[in-house]
Length: 101
Image (cartoon, rainbow, N blue to C red; front, side):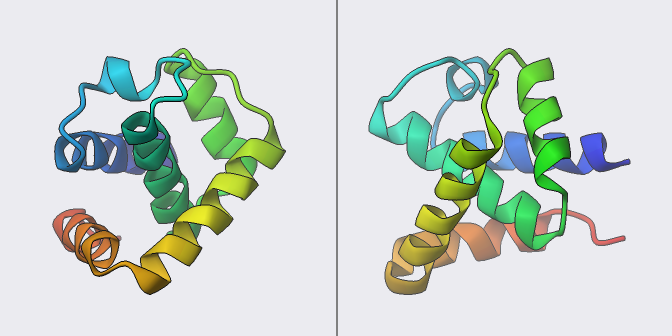
């Protein structure tokens, strides 16, 4: 069940950031890819989905990460979302579009 929610978020984030899933899960430090992944971590952890699940799902999609990378990305996204109206809007749109349990 958590994998399905993770993939719904991933699809929605990729769409909002105008990326393909392949681009989002490639090992890249391009700002748009990093921002998209961090938004994904934020949404998943707010759900809540455990960091270990997020890590496993990311690896299954082709991007191996350590726990600290996910936690750092979550904290960075949370800080940006608290101050940037565009990111707040994106996060709310995605959360409203994903079915609640």
